[in-house]
Length: 73
Image (cartoon, rainbow, N blue to C red; front, top):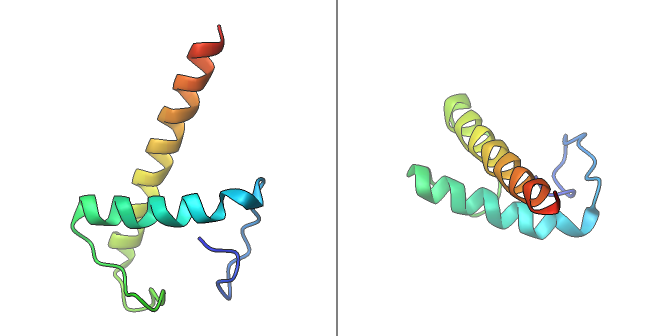
């Protein structure tokens, strides 16, 4: 998720959010019982593990956005 990862073509809309997203990735992985290698290389992780982490992050970000939108109206 970090901008510095080689092979990552994702561009963050808010580059300052990079650290928060990286922290969220580790929090979600811990909740799911998945360990992410400390060196950041996820090539040995199962596709299912990476998908579970990404899906959970997406769900959480959607929930946050919905709460923020609900608070504005």
